[in-house]
Amino acid sequence: MAEEKRKNVGTATTPHQVFLNERQQLKAEGVLNVDHFSDAEVTLETTGGVMVVKGENLHIQQLNLDDGRLSMTGTVHSLVYAGDGALKKSKGLLAKMFK
Image (cartoon, rainbow, N blue to C red; front, top):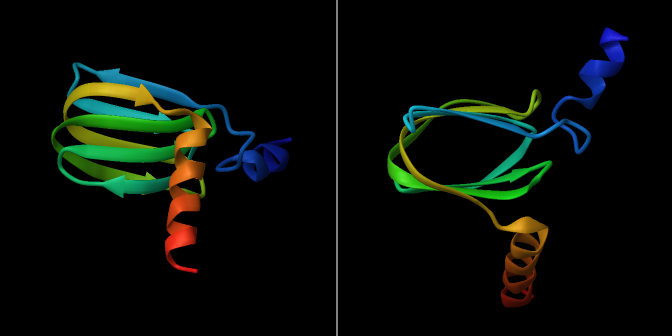
């Protein structure tokens, strides 16, 4: 059973969870990919959809895509889900530009 659980970690079946502590430390599970990061914005593809975190002095402390886990620090001002469509549309636009 433990072997089955490991196979699902970091895949689309991993449950998506977010833990925010005092707006200073964010931990997320179910992370599939980091699409963009800067000290003001981090865009993540998760099993729950595209998640955009905005704030100040954002730093990714730990990222393990095999386990689907991310830990970051900084002051979080907003956390928004853009849905699956926003990421797919942006990839489509880039694909058209580089044909």
